[in-house]
Length: 551
Image 1 (cartoon, rainbow, N blue to C red):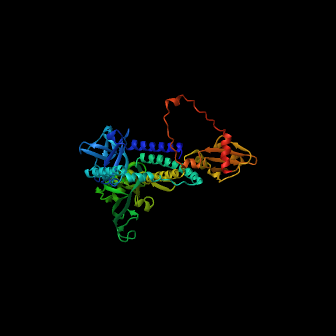
Image 2: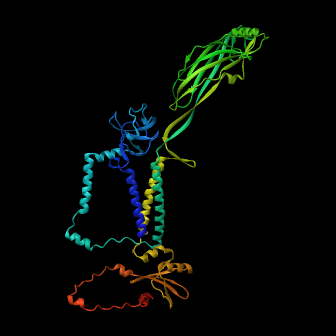
Image 3: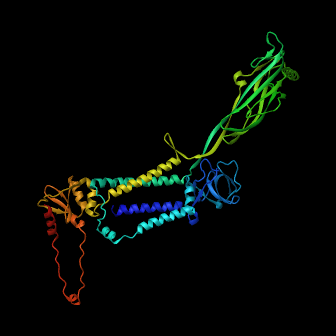
């Protein structure tokens, strides 16, 4: 790995370490993170005894945030959810509690908002803080230090000096070139996973969800009565759906049964009665009476009203006589008056009254108004909007992914990408650590290793290796590479000439260790002697010598 990728890797590692330190540095040491070990059942099912909650201080807090604060009444740190505001103070309640916290902390008293939950992490943290945990940790550190500093005997040290250094395997240039591409891709994936995971961990783990629950009140009317037996009423009974002939019917009883049904209903209570009225088309209206009030048990109850049909007919006839009309029809109405309260999905609701039962009243009869089925079985629906806090989810096309799974995927992808990045970077490293090997790996698809070749009569030395590569691209040919003892020679053969680039310091020069040169301290007389003049041979003769070694 050359300087630029190594610097980029070090910078990325340092950036990740600084980001982790900034996110998880404890509040007691000047950071913004608070570590709380949970116990009890007040935050179940999300938190259990022994879990670790990591909270971070925020500039503001809102309803539905899980926060921690120092409780003055309990003399400990409490982590519950904000459910409401009381001026500039927070109303706090545990998710599994049915009561509110006694303390109403202000913003300055809140230690932080939930950032991360570590299952059973509190037990591990508690073990490390215990005397036994500290002792075990100290012994482990001391053992590692002792092993690292263990003195070697004189013979062991001599054997270590004679032992050759570990030589990492060198992979072929095409493999190393491909590994570098894999490393670049893995680094990009790791960066994306780190950014995405950071965003996922900074996002709240829960969200407010709203759904609509329908509470249905189903009613059922019925009526019965006694009548003079004869052709009209053979058994002397008036049944539901029959026309009530007022001259024959002696009494009429109207019953109404009300039933409340819906999902997640609780604490249902209420009362109901039936009101009987009569009204004419000209606006006249009279009250005939009401049934006794009955309580609703679990949302159900039955009210019974007595209807005096003869009295209703007489009042109608008297009204028309008073206004000087020859007569006419009117409407007799039996109206349920019901008040039903309760909770649906934990949200309070109040249901109204079902539709009334209407009869058409004239001088001789009482008939159902409208269709019997709809009139006798009225139904009303009350919509209840229920909001609750649920784990945050993401919809990807038709798949719903919980935030916990998304965080896990981001962490797994990040770790795997780092492993692949490290492996590929090690495989794609520059084995010899020089410009020749770097050039071979960089352009492995165009390099052809050779043992020897004839350069031809015309040799043109180019300025650098990349210039030679551009020549090879222009001629669409290969770059010949000869790894000699004194230099690496790269060449591109053309019809009329050979283009060449030489990297001094060949294979043997790199493999053999440097030879120490003894230094003699000159005498005073030597300092006055004239310096010898050394004339270097021309470059062309050196180059010719290099070519002659493998031509």
